Amino acid sequence: MESHLTRTRREPRRAARRLATSVFAAALCVVAGALVVAPAALAKTYSDVPKTYWDRADIAWVTNQGPTSAKALDDFSGVFKPCQPVTREQFARALVVLGGLQDTQVATPVAVPDLPAGDGYAPYVQIALHLHLLSQYKDGFHPTEAMQSWQVDSGAVHLARQLDPQADWSMLSALNPAAWEPVAKWKTGAPRYLPTEVAARYLGLRYNHPSASDALEVSPREKIDRAEVAAILYRARHLSSWSIAGLAEYDKVTLPALTARQRQIVAFALAYIGYPYVWAGEYPSKDSPYGMQAHGGFDCSGFDWWVMKMHFGYTVNERVASAMAGAAKPRITRAKLVPGDLIFFGPNGPKSTVASIYHAALYLGNGWFIQSTGSLDGVGLSSITSDSWWKHDFAWGRRLLKKGEFAPAVVAPPVS
Image (cartoon, rainbow, N blue to C red):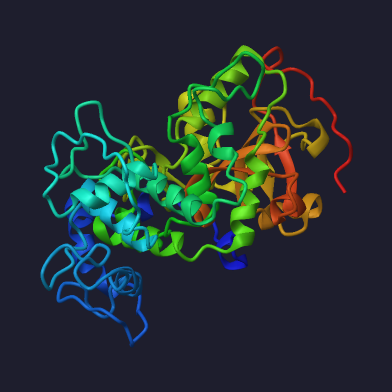
């Protein structure tokens, strides 16, 4: 759940206040030790992880798990190498050790042509493959290849599933883009990682870096460093049963009948699932036409701006959420929302003032919307019908679609 502090975080001004250059971004991982003070008493320390490093506590906890000779992510002598990409073999061992799964018997090992059986990582890779925590490529495991961000999220979600098999994990198959049809006989073409990325963001596995450190954020197909992986794995091992139970709301995500234009909007928006939350972000890469961003990604109104204005060309002259909301004439009520509407949230719901509007998102239909928010550290799916503050703080919508581009709203029963 998003904290009150996070949800009232105001939208940024644009290019003039953005963070800097690629040189600064490359250096930030090294100097990030000055960002967050960690607890003093830690079980494990490394010479390259100073006391003030942003996730020193996570690194210390993760690397203290497992047998003495094979601690999770403890792959180097005396150093952690936080800014170095995590490799597939390192990640496999970390998953297995953190799950306490290292004694799992694999009756019939699979062939891993690029990893000799005598390699120290080989037993962990075999267990990870056997338990479906990770998978192989067609030509092998690629043990020294750098993990991509979405792959780490997927592995962390499957580790949580392995450790809590009685929970409802149906959404992982229900949202599989190869089969998911939110509208009968229509598949969205969403990325293959849609279900695990939705789950990872909902479960809070991703750390939302402060705006001054947005250069550390990672897009789904980018390499992810060892410090970021430690933060994800720590969270994956400290999930509450109630947070996992909340995934059940994604078991059946359906949308109303969509026009051709609405399908285009939904499909395009879903392509950005898992992109990070970036202060003042409105573009998927750093080189926005409106000025350099610290990293590719979006703030809340920036995501709406990217989809509806920059890609589809609708008239949106405002950039921040409150201004976008103020331009809604007429204001669309919950019952009359259609896919493609912008939606806004305020502390007093429909009675909120324009100045108090703190969040914007894009409506998909049947209560579902797609948003970029700090609590998810990026783009994810949420609902205004589930029992959350999104339901209680929904203020109104704004229609950008033109006549003929949308079907009339199907009025649902009143929301209590």
